[in-house]
Image 1: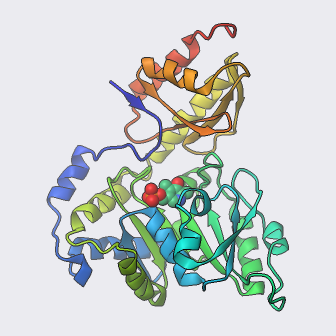
Image 2: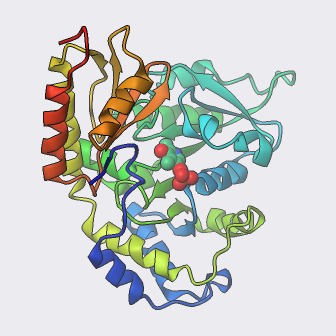
Image 3: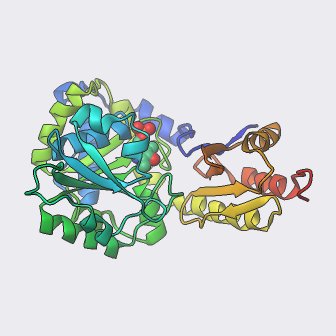
Length: 345
Ligand SMILES: *Cc1c(COP(=O)(O)O)cnc(C)c1O
């Protein structure tokens, strides 16, 4: 048995989810005739209290579409330097939208209203790019699953309104933030121009993200998705997994959070661990004492059938998820506590 803690994207559909997929009514979604995709889009729009939503094959495509909708070539957007849209979307911001990124060094991927305000280029100074968009990430991926306080999100919204900036949320793991902070999706729907959410991370669907916005924006988003090559035909089989996930897999995220917290607690006691970043959701980032190679350590765990990942710069990452069960968790905690690292026990 292999325990894969590389990401919450490694999950496979549960039996119930598979059944829902097999029973899905489908049609051609490129003609908007897939009833299950339509149902998913209406459901997600409703959950966020926004007008409309659109199903995407990936979170990357949903984010890139939002950025395309909200900017013009030559513009600049503001984001944290850890942002997924900047680091892990293949340079899509410049490739797809001709937009530059003004990167802020925030706190574990989170930026503040005053940082945003200080990084807006004066609009009448035509030598610099025009700032038109602020993009937040919640929870932060590279920031170790940290989540925003609603007060900060609203303060940044205020700055956006004062300066006529659009406001996007990369909410790939927003579900985790909602559970951890006890927030409601409608609080987010009321604030952002566009929100992307993933169904294929903590929620455990095999494929899919949703972009949520106004009717007008989503109408434009259909064309952008087409241009990006994202039109899918009988996508209802995938949408059915998403609907099932929304109905069954949100509340249980608290289990992933508890297990991540327990891993944090144990790691902190171990002599070979140098630092564990504070755990807020389902991501644990830690580093090893000097003299231990990350690659060797990961190999050691691999021999015990535990897979984890490296973020580079001596940061290791564990992500808990739907397929990481209690028995596996207890085994991992035990392995960590018994691990012999020469010179550090
Ligand atoms: C995973 C992720 C995405 C989207 O990734 P895809 O693999 O394209 O679905 C976007 N933003 C963040 C923060 C993510 O963690």
